[in-house]
Length: 186
Image (cartoon, rainbow, N blue to C red; front, top):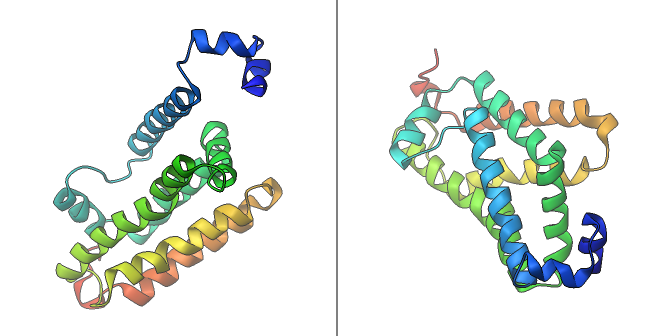
């Protein structure tokens, strides 16, 4: 609390004039992250909405469009000052706080994997991807991206290297899982 108060130029006790508790501060930060994330997905045109609508949009995305979206999302979590600091804070605090752990898991582990699991399951059912376990497919897709975020977090001079790896990952993922018999982008 002292660190927060010092950063904004007030006494620690004065923070409680603005927030009821530490939990209230944390919840306000989560709300702000959520607002900024929603604005970002609209800005970069990340498919969102009802499951069927999202699946349809992804089914008709070209590989280049998917790479562009993945790159924009990756750079958002890597370079956006607020999002990057929030991710770093949760990475550390997840070992001290069950609430921070739950939020970290929801936003950076289970949330993306569960979303992609549903997406890939539906895309498999529509013959966009080969038949396989969609949960494992989601792990195959997301894990390297999460690893790249961790690896390149404090290496701004290596951003181009990270982006090249990300692009190659998506191309290889597509070549492994895409159902060639049902390529709607050609």
